[in-house]
Amino acid sequence: MKRWFFSIALPLMLVTVQAQPRSCLRVMPVDELIRSSTLIARVMVQKVSRANYRGAFNQLALLQAKDIIDGNTSLQQITILSKATVACANDIYEKKQEMLVFLVPEDSLYRTQNFQYGQFLIVEEVVKGWRDQANNVSDKPYLEVRKEIEDYLRALRNQNQPQPPQPPQPNLVVPAPPSNNSQPAKPKPAPPPPPNGKPPTENLSNI
Image (cartoon, rainbow, N blue to C red; front, top):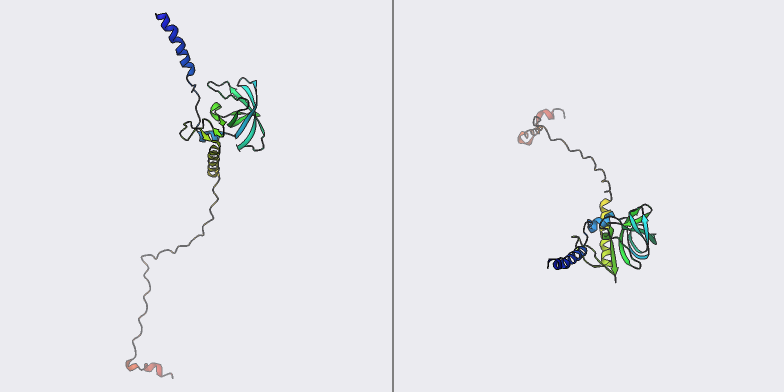
């Protein structure tokens, strides 16, 4: 009876372990993914081939650039090192896939930023597995994703621009307040009027 139980339970346990998603890689938030990528583009996978690049990558993918959102807009074809040997990495490309990719340089080529979390399949103009600000997975139309990326890049560039210097302010001379010791001069009193409206006699003797 025990042998029968283990013969049934053991395969079920193996299937359960294999079905669990591998989550030992940190998933970058979208803003970090955009900020840390050198090339952001919508691409079509033209060709894939096996490779052994310094023991770090096992696949070479040739991508056709269809819409470069950020980076070198003159690129028409992009060569990607993929299928990294890093634990839990799954950055694999398949021929004829249409994808939104976030790339960084790797020697004279490129690699996918954040491995499989920096590549998004596009199906019928919808970006599959896009992530919102809380890093929750949510499919989203490509044009909306593109605008979101452009808005973030625009805000980032405006933030990094130096502020224009302020024009010098004219020096204003503020008069000092009078000291407490100095008293303002008092006006002289007016002379009294002459009697009967006649001028003084001393003033008539010279006429």
